[in-house]
Length: 513
Image (cartoon, rainbow, N blue to C red; front, side, top):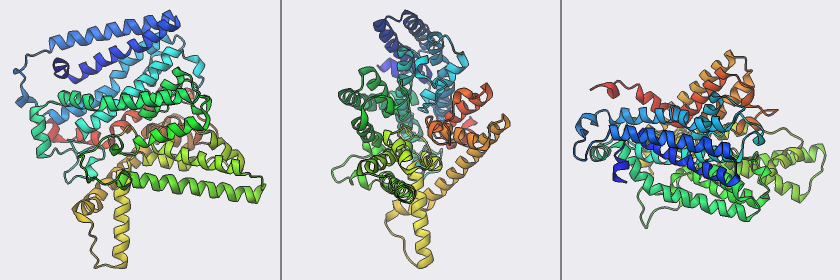
């Protein structure tokens, strides 16, 4: 384990990928699908061997590492490694996918792996029957590993650099490491910190996945579908081998279980704590959780009242059962798209049919843009930034009423209302400009305004299933050409890494010796 932690970070990723390929290979052997088994076994052996050769060539005995020479380049190397992981690693992951799926191109397989690794869940295969069970399992497994990767890199790489949402609650500038973090960096390199936090977070991640797997299997889902959905829920990827929860056969109980586990994407404090102590405030007082609960309560209530008025005015055809189903569909959809998972509820279709109104796609896109919590698998802008802007707005209203009032609430609250709100607003602007730029690029290839908007927000917020429910008619990634797919794949990487990390790479200090 010590030697593994000292390997180059990308070599570690190659070894993990090679080992993960054996999971669908074994499953293919159980199903007697020999072609799929060979594709995954050969790819596993090939890339594991390549990783070992690179590790041997780069090996240095303990005590011979030149830490002082790489100290100044630590931040740059970390961000470059993350960019490489999301752009180059899918080239490896796509090999067994392409070999096992004969009726597709390698580029399409690469797009699928970028989508899975970034936990977007966008797929080019609208008919799940086109892919074999081992390939579906591989896609869900890559998405699950991508979720774990997002967890670990957030606390091991982005947090010390004050990126990924941590800049809102910190007094440092984005991309600037604090003294304590820099001292830690001098002791442990980035790949060693990654190994340390992986050892800490992986048991939690695995245990939660197994718990949801068994729970979904107990309420009526097949073990294979339950496993894929459990991995997709924990990673908020929305990947499904049967076309979504509506086809899983678990009904209301399955949606209730998924609903409970999606709360993990609203705040990192649901599964870990920065400084655990006996007098820690309850979870519902966490800023991200407060904003999320407010949205989960108010938005479905608004939708329910809108449907209710429409039914009474149009047809008057309503029952208590249909009303409750509609309300539950709204609640589930709000949490599903706020966490950027994108699972659809059976009650959502009931709500649409019951009210006679079209689905409010703009509202779902807005929820996906808000996103989930910092250092979680969710994408989007992040709730902590929304919280900072809300607090800043409240304070500005108070100053309009009482110009000489004192805000109070402590130094942390004042910092969030001032510096935190400023950084959050800058990020919102960068996010909006990115949406506009990607939409313009897609429009150059013939997409209309509505389609370009939905595809852009779906990719940038890592909410792939959004294209199925946001528009008047479902859209499909498979209908796009190669240039549009390439643009959206790059947008997925931007959405997962966040634009501030890319901007930090352009900092001249990162490239000075």
